[in-house]
Structure formats: C-alpha cells, structure tokens
Image 1: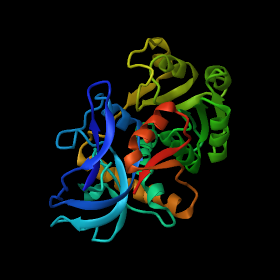
Image 2: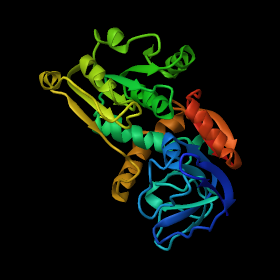
Image 3: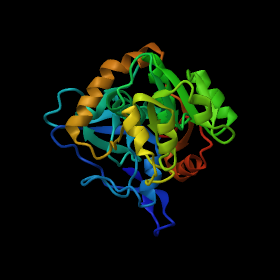
Length: 322
C-alpha cells in the first residue's frame, strides 16, 4: 500500500508518499480501505518530533482519524462486516491507504455525508464530548467560552453546545472567522486581535471554558468565571506555564482540568464511541449538526495540507482524500 511518511532530519521534516507494508487486523480489529483522513494539529506536532504516538503505533505515519470501507475483519469482530462504510478514531497511522483499528473505535458514516466529511468527525467529536460534556459537565442554560472557535474542535464545540442548550461565546482571529462562528450558532464572537474577551464577557460570566491556548489565558479565564466554573484544557499553544491568582480559584470554587485523548485506554475510547453514537449521531443524521470541511488535498499533497494548517487561515477541517 501507499502511506504518507515523515522523512528528513530534525527541524526539516517533510511528508512523502511511499510504499509501506500492508497492516493485518488482530482478532478484535477491522482493516479499513481508507478513502479520506482528517488533518489535525497533533499531526503537525508528530511531524516535528514533538508528539510521539503510543507504543505499537507507527511513529512515521501521522493521522488520527479516517473514513473508508471495511475490507477485512478480525476473527472476533462482531459489530462490522466487509463492505461497511465507517469512520474511525486512531492513535496514528491514518495517512495511508489501509489502516487497522479496534472495532469499538469505529462509527457508521452518517447518511448523506461524503467520505471527506465523515473523516473530519472523529477526533473533534471525541475530544469535545469527553472534555466539554464529561470533564466540563456543560449543562443546558450554562455559558461556555470556546477559544479557537474556528478550528475543527471549535466548530464542533459550537454546534454541540448549542444543540444541548448552552449559550456560546468564542474567540477568533479575524472578522471572517467571527462571521462563520456566528453562522454556526455562536452567540458572541470576539476577535482577540482587536478586542479583549474579559471586557466583553465579564458582565455575563462563563461556566465552562474549553481552552487550547494555555499560558496567560488561564488567569484571563479565571477572571470571568462564574462560581463553580470549570476550565478544561486540551492544548497549550501559548505555553505550559502560567501564573494565576489562587485566591480567585478558591473564592469561586473553580475546577481546572484537562486531558489528552490519543494515549487513553481502549475501554475509554470504546465507551466514548458508544456515548457519541447515542447522543451525537442523531444530530448528524438529522442535519442539525454538520461537518465543516474547509479544503481537501490528495494524499501526495499532505505537506501542503500541513502548511495550510500552520497558517491558521482555515475555518473548519482540512482533509486528505483518495
């Protein structure tokens, strides 16, 4: 098969389409003929040597989500059969013509969705559901602030938070991105390059923050939180170290938490997939929650896809297609 491999010396890593050994499914895995693969910032970090995959996962082939057709099932697979159309969450290796994955990490492709649209779903939906609705415990009527509102995670969080009855605030980096987030359902979009989100949101307050920025944003988040608020971290693009006012955390009885998904155990991902199928898939089937694909690239253009993501000029997901 063909796969997109990370090559080159440290600091000069690039992506190249090469011949690669075909994978074989274990007893509880399915083998998927990949039609499309989502591109995520974690893939960029892996290419640069900053986000190694878990043990047993290819180190030289990125890719955390795919869609395609089941071409082979392990001996003890019960949920899927050859020919089923699925999308799947992976721990890596998705930039390839074939992948193997545990059967419980696959979901059926929703009606009316293309392979490209389906491939854009797993990583963002799994991340948002586990962090906003489980760790963040977002409830109907609460206020949520989503940093990076126009990212793949952001557009997913906007739509799901609105679908479950929350008031949604986002931060973005341009007027165009603000407009897109409002069209998706955000109530307020703050351009962080020209506006201060604390000034605009402090009078309303926030119950949940989904933050991928980190650094100085932590104290800024704390300053606008309502009592019993929850701040959830999924990345720290500005930095891992922050100085905060601990007294405010105590006085407001805040919870500051966070998580990573890639290295979590299979049982967790399997249960998460089940919850998502029950709670989110009906929204996709009805069309009330929609995939947002910004641009597609062929697999041999994977480096161009990474360059677009690094530019942060996209709104929504970037996808590789075959």
